[in-house]
Image (cartoon, rainbow, N blue to C red; front, top):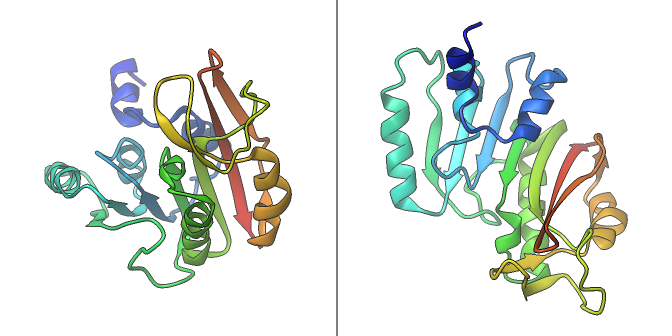
Length: 204
């Protein structure tokens, strides 16, 4: 395949989603939800592969642009459903998606209860055996040992983010929500200024 064609198909897709593509997660047609989809960086590849996509974002302007862009994609076999919505209160019925993407959204939680409600909302709409892909700021590998996490914090990169306590997430919240870890936890430490964790979880 021509390199330019491959780049066009993959676009700006998160590298860990590309990893899951290579591992066969998207071999069969799936019903996929992307929450906090933005301009569709992770939807484009999956749309071109023929998956049934739904995308939500809280930014109306971004959603309007995304709708317009997908309307011009003439080769799509299934047209994505795009809407405005907040994670934690998604206007969706339970247990309807095979795969949920949540890339760089959970760290905008206001507090611990809000974080739990956001994660629970995604679990609610997943089918039994469905997969959740999430990437967010966590305490894992950060060097501020004296701090208590599970709250909004000024982190070393100059931003304010909700930093989830990684050990609490792994040992308490994930099991409580009936989720099973199916891939190794991956954390990228960016010069000790931000710590981004990726989890791949499956519902029972």
